Length: 193
Image (cartoon, rainbow, N blue to C red; front, side):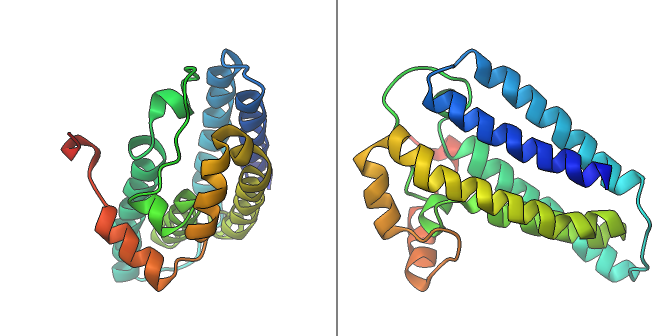
C-alpha cells in the first residue's frame, strides 16, 4: 500500500507544480518535477516488484506489454512532445498558448487516458495485483488533478483562449467530432515547419 501512497504523493506534487507555475516560481518547478519523478518511479517500481501476482495467459501478457508500450508512447508524446516543453515544464517566461491540435483536440487532458491504459495494460502484462489495485486509485487522483487544473490554474495561465478551448474540446471523454478533429490535426513534432 505504501507504493500506492507514494504515487498519490506524486499527484500532490503535480498540484504544487501547477501552483508554483501560476505564482511564477519558475526556479521551484524543476525541483518539484524531480520530486514527482522520484515518487512516481518508486511507486511504479514498488507496485511491480513488491506485489502479489495473478495468473495471466502468455498471449494476454504479450498483448498487454505491446499495448502498454503503445500507451506509454502516447503519454510521452502528448505531455512532452506535442506541447512546448520550454514553456510548460522548464519555466521560461513568455506568452502561453493553448495547444488544440492532435491529441489535445481529442480531449483537454489526453495524458489521463494514456496513463490509465498504460498502467492497466502493464498490470496484466506483469500480473501485478498491486498495480491493478493502484490503477483506479491513481486514475482518480489524476482526474482530480486535471479537474483543478481545468477550473483553477489553466484559465489563469492561458487566459480567455482556454475558455474557448473548454467550449470546443471535451474534458476527458472523446466525442465523434473530437476524434475526427484529432486525426485531422495530428502531426509528429519533427514534421512541423
